[in-house]
Image 1 (cartoon, rainbow, N blue to C red):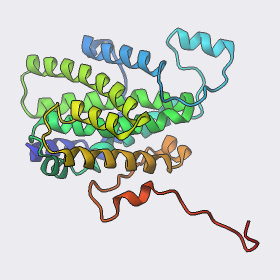
Image 2: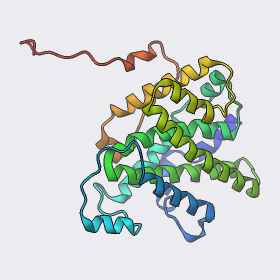
Image 3: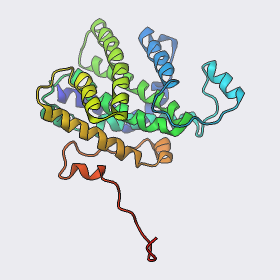
Length: 267
């Protein structure tokens, strides 16, 4: 199963994704009720995000056109943001060692397990990009859009029946937005709350070894801090993100505050 998922991913590598993104990122009337529901729900959630920074000051006209469903002026062109969003999602699925997650966390090697690991990384990217104001939130919409396009294509490549795939997508949609709320609460709270969110969403309430939860809690904390250290301007323009290993020799080193740097006068 993992090999098949990787094969599906190879068919849509970074270069091919970027070359075809103009058609991929356009929403047409023939995309079906499920995709329209995704866009509506995500727009609603992005307007009420608990992790957003202080709102950018916008004029009355901008607020009016945003209320009508338009984006309004952004820091960079929409095309550049869409390409960056596509590349960021690609980093989530191509730079993550899924087999290591399956082996260390004893997860079944299925499409659903792949999706649960992928959505965890997508969520961490959403948390980071929502710190970049309205432009970052606009980018978040297309990261999620790319995710659902990819999940649907992988399901077709794996030969899943169209009716069953539609039902699976509907279930994944519900689980995804429930996971967003749970992970948001966990990252803003202590490790116990975050562990509970991972237990519910990533492990599907099926984790008997507390060491697996401890490993994932530490992984999420260090990844979020790692993403926070990346330049917002670079992320908006390139979408390139990197991930720290699931297990490393000194994993907690990133959680320690940096030592202060003094000049020659001791200041």
